[in-house]
Length: 225
Ligand code: SAH
Image (cartoon, rainbow, N blue to C red; front, side, top):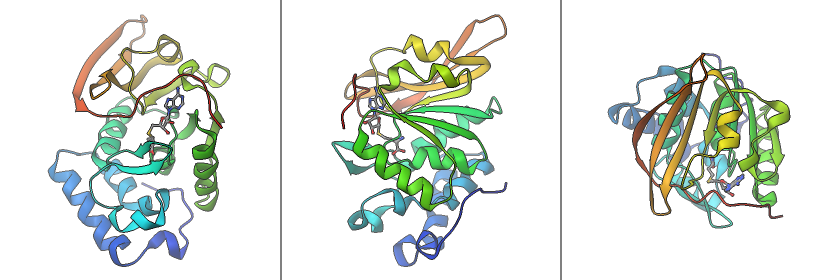
């Protein structure tokens, strides 16, 4: 896999952000059932420590969610890997992410060579994520908006990934899914959700499977600066 990213010295890291530490995370993900080498390679390459505050950088390659400010979190690497693996099953080209947050999940998708569109409702987080995309030379399309409306002007999308939890699937998003496309989203109560993976077939029928329990921050309405 060719990883499309510019790697400056700070992106390569040292000590607790070194390649050796990242390789250990990848081995852990492999032991925990992540099989797709393309995904493992993307996780190995994308510098997660640049997507969190410097004071937390030493924890960047632990398999855990971490705070990113504004009451939000960067997802656990295993969850990012599992969701990405699920999306790749339909061999997508154009992907929509709802909930840019730190920008890490979007960067992993872009490193896989996908055309990434991402929407974030908190302006402050989106501005920081955009800076990171620029630093890493990642060409990611992003929008400050309430992602529950999706991005209809740019759709349909071969795959859609929702990285915030809602009590039910959002119809506007399912409607923007191309034929054969896969949508992955955490659905359920505030403190625990099921990771749903659904695919739209040629007749417009939707098939659905559950990938397991997850905990995400809530999908909220409206926008904030
Ligand atoms: N994918 C992110 C995870 C971020 S946590 C990462 O890799 O870091 C979930 C994000 O979803 C938060 O930043 C939150 O502000 C955002 N969010 C919640 N509701 C949203 C909505 N309706 N539209 C867009 N973003 C939303």
